[in-house]
Amino acid sequence: MKIAIAGTGYVGLVTGVCLAEVGHENVVCVDVDEKKVELMKAGVAPIYENDLEDLMVKNYELGRLHYTTDYKNAYKDADVIIVAVGTPERSDGSANLDYIKIVANEIADTINKDTLIVIKSTVPIGTNEKIEKYITNKLKNDVKIEVASNPEFLSQGTAVKDTLNASRIVVGVESEWAKDILERIYTPFNQPIVVTNRNSAEMIKYASNDFLALKISFMNDIANLCEIVGANIEDVAKGMSFDDRIGSKFLRAGIGYGGSCFPKDTKALHWLATHNGYELKTVKAAIEVNENQKLKLVRKASDLVETFEDIKVAILGLTFKPETDDIREAPSIPNIKYLIERGSNVVAYDPIGIENTKRIFKDSISYTKSIDEAIENADLCLIMTEWKDVVNYDLNKYKEKMNKALVLDGRNCYKMEDAKDAGIEYYSIGR
Ligand code: UDX
Image 1 (spheres, rainbow, N blue to C red):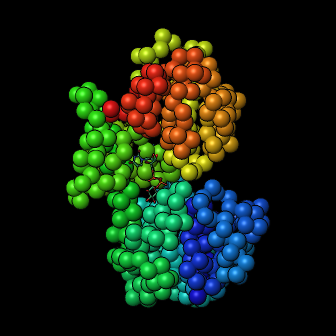
Image 2: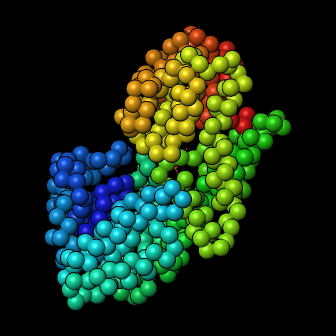
Image 3: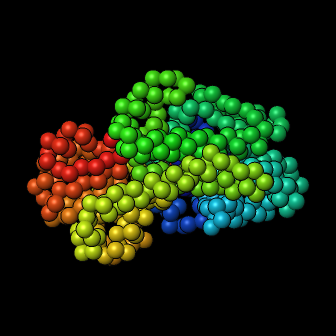
């Protein structure tokens, strides 16, 4: 079976590599960027992702995995084309499907055998059906196509592990033909396969992400109340977690969720509901709580410092979570903007997120890969990402190095008593 993959971002590349890894012998990853393709052939991943490069090299050398910009050759005789291009957020919250449309046109122009087209990109409910009609109307050759939905649930940082050990594989199909092909593709993964119609599969993706976002916003809401009434969110979360119906994951309070999925997918589903005359109140609440939570630390800081002007503020962590260099929708961004507007001298620490952050803030802030350097003579320290280096940092150093040891921790990295013992003025979330 020849499998072509359109797009080599987090989802496309990881999917291609993992399909080759489980034994598929002809997987072709297609990208428009010649430079990126050459780098991938040399075993260099265009994204930061644990375990990815080792498996890229291994499967490329085995001849099971290929990279190309030549979509015509890749698509024309493919049995399956997996579409994994981005669906970014439009300013009104809806999903932008321009990249999907480009690929759909390329497919319609080139294929000359019956092909199953599998949409992995997150798309609004009903889109698979529309794509099928669109391609069918534009087909150059006399072939049959079907579009199937196959949403992706991987998390950044653990994408390879998540794909090889997925909790489930969801396939939304309208025929036995499509179901058989997808079962053949996914049986080697040895994971539960949930077969539904296309609309339900598309909804499963949004509902799963939005439910997780809701869970986080709920905990953040409760954490804020804990602060007022003198409870401790970590004890509360622990006490809740023993109930199987609640579960132990995604109960960590903090300064809100970021990344390329939760913010976008909550807004997209809310937009879709509104567009269909329905108000999705729970998701709306999750979005509002998250927006509010993101600026919690600077709001708290404004009660604690006389002025933000000309003070040195250390930002520890720029990425939306550890083990990724991705800063999309990261809480660090609005916080840094807030501080720049008020004339602070911001020094940002991150082990791998600096390059991406420089694209936004250029030289309006300073950057360092050393926590020591970031906090040296700082008047205020804001912890934005729970990087291991931050969690394991010697708390005494805040007292030694900072001008005033005022630490506001958005990720609850330290025990309250340890912070107290180290003599720092320490505030965290919900404790
Ligand atoms: C998420 C989903 O987990 C994944 O299934 C989907 O395919 C894509 O979106 P990702 O965005 O990579 O993955 O990261 P995730 O680990 O889910 O974290 C998202 C955000 O939520 C981060 O900003 C993280 O800090 C935050 N988070 C997560 C919390 O604040 N508390 C938690 O308990 C868990």
